[in-house]
Image 1 (cartoon, rainbow, N blue to C red):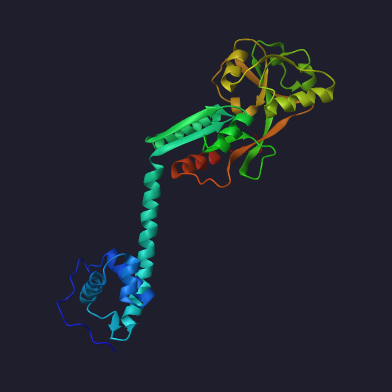
Image 2 (image 1 turned 60 degrees about the vertical axis):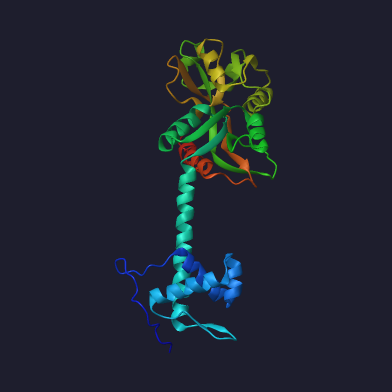
Length: 313
């Protein structure tokens, strides 16, 4: 049994001895390498400095942690006990510091989102901005092809878009299946109907999304199957422009219902599209091998929660 070291009594702060993280790291290195020279090289300090650090720690604890002879170094029973405790404390300290760093990083930085549904994402950004006012957020509005390009090129951290066939380099997460509805002015002849059959759109002027968009392909295919061609009076490149034109009486529009279920345009009404009902899958897209920053991951987490489509929608 090893006799305790004779010296000054351990200093106390409350009931705890004064032990710092460098001393913990020193003990763990010596215990692992079983050599002061190797442990010092691992820590990037001199061997005398390491020896002094261990000696001071042993004096503070009032017991020997290592037995040293000219031929070998062994760890004492007290040393084994202390090493087990040091590993737990050191790991907890590293995890705690990492959590603090991630929290700090989440509270600052920049996030760029490319979204198909700007009004829904705008609400998410407003909520996130109140929580973390030091984060700069950019919202890029667009359609499927542009959103995928933004994510692929790294211009956007993640995107909210219609999901379709994507290369394996993308990660996708479905937010749900969203029905397509018709948006029109409350003085439009079709506005009096509680729901609108697809064939009723045969001669209706439409404000439409670009040909490359998933919604446009979907409704054009449905018209072809029904034996007629839709009248795309105006094609626009931005969702908000589409809404402004519909509000101005240019025509009706077929869009995902969730995107426009808000009182931003008091003269507009929305009606479900039936016979056949049409829908598209909305979801999150990002690159598989690109890790999100804490700020982007936090915004994505909130978007996932707020934009998920309920079955009753």
